[in-house]
Image 1: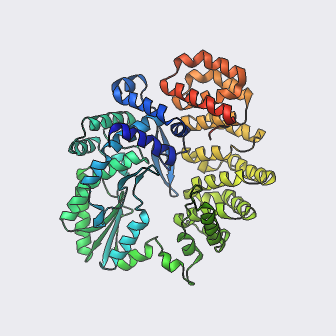
Image 2: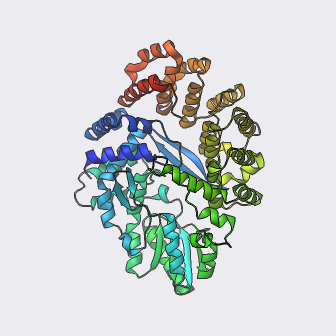
Image 3: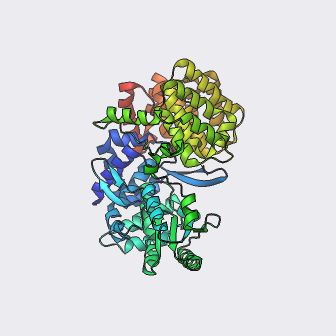
Length: 533
């Protein structure tokens, strides 16, 4: 893919699908959709003079703590959306060549992130999924008595840049793109020689390339395995073979600066593996003997409102969900000491298809302080669903949801100490304006050093037209981060003439990206006066 085409593809992909499932969708992605030509022009200018742009407008990145399970945490990196689009553009320009050197998909071994640009939908990867991986694993376990289950510890943060650079340089006809990628990674990692930003498609493509050598070493040794990202399942004739293979894999990963997770590495009988496998056969789920949980997991909750058959698809989905006791499933999960995150996430998401009364019942259950702690591994999904239910609820129901959300803050829920969790909480609070919610958000803004959280508060205050707070905040504009500055440009439109005079006063200090944001939002504000939260 030529760089110009890659830039357009990157912007379209990010605009349609976002860049990560960790962070909230940044409003810059909406700009990419609405002003594709202008955004592409800016990214091309960055590509033409990368050293100049890196020195004058270096990429701002933000590391935030995100929750994994009950007691696990990891750092995730949010990149300035313009620089992130450029990063993805560079990787997409080489993605076809990267895919061509990987273990072929037809071998049924490596399932994760197989590149195939789908122009109509602006999608980067084939539809091969975790489910396909698990199905193949279950099939292979039928023919192998012993299974090794393991994954790589802190995979993305430990990937060496030099290994990636060498692998990229071996690709034919890539020019100086590898160097440009390395220059960006150097800035993203703050001059540390290892680590990829977690979550985005560009990093996923590079991470797959980093493991390709190990994949081929395993295959040449005759090892039968399946891999999805950093998860391995290895199929062996006996425990001795399993142990030898585990040693071999550990050695080869060590050469790449990677190690396996001790706590997640297990040698299992095939029977034990199948019992612990979390994939449920949809055919079994359709049977009369299937549990409610099995039936739920067999249903795809993906719904395209723009499909030609959208109305029929929604009716079918709603009918399937109505045959399942979603409230009962949630109750059983909450009653556990440790939830099944796969089941709980699916059940929480299914709330959106329930009738309004059931939706409110479910949300009240989710927002109970004790229940929220039990649901900690899926807290982000809970906040997403609460926000969506809130938007379609009556004013009385919204008031009760607001009360429950405010209680989480008043009771100092420890879940809100996790930055990514807090960001989704702030967005869930952005419904109807109340004095109590204003006070909470002001406290969050004053106490947080996280630019994304502060940016969200600015946007919520703009949505509520909190003139007194916005007018005061503009005096602190010079000390704001890039993320906050961009949000305040949007917020200034809710200050009327005061905002216009302020923009005229500070616009000479704006970067090209900030000028484009001003131009884009000026038209958007005149059209609907809404804040892109």
